[in-house]
Image (cartoon, rainbow, N blue to C red; front, side, top):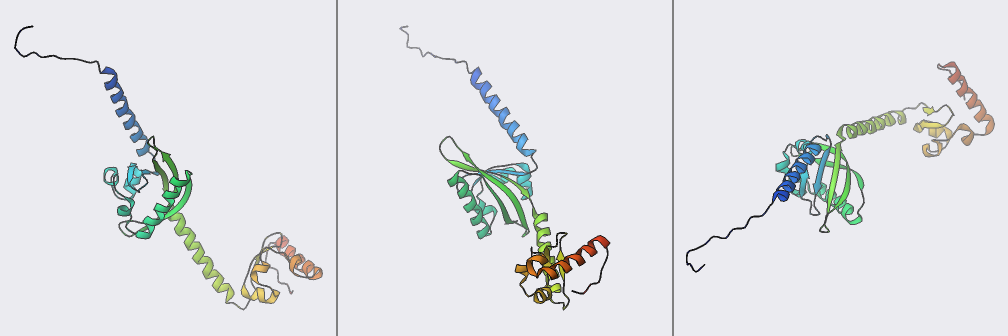
Length: 231
């Protein structure tokens, strides 16, 4: 006191609790990161504008990137096909607006031009500030989609062959219901295939004729071999 010499006044505070909380937060973030990176499915979070906020290792690797390269980019950059990005945005907006989970199958074109299919569950992720993000979990179903398409094409080829033969061709189940009829069979029966499929001979023919057809069908089933009949 009474001196003009400068003095230093210092304060110290115990921040042990804060430092402990920070360490716990870091550990928690690392743990969550470890968990999502060990999930084989694609996991991601986007904001309402379509910007990726989080993606796991499996998701980033699927698109040939690292999580660091993915985060912060908008889906319009990631998926340059305009219609695909627009379709994704519409589904995301529905999740946000309706606050409901949505299951969807999405077709995407990768950077190398390959078309892939993803089965995806999207759900709203409300934030404390009122914003709503979109949490997504997806699995690749490209192989299944290609198999389905191959089956459709195979069935179309088979139908073309059957409908261009002059023979009557039909398929029934063990209850006698028509499962398939070709064009010639429909002509002979006198009804469209739509009117025949799912029906039995008793729904189509007079009872006496239907009983004869049923008897012949049962003969084939019981014999377990080809039986030649005249109807």
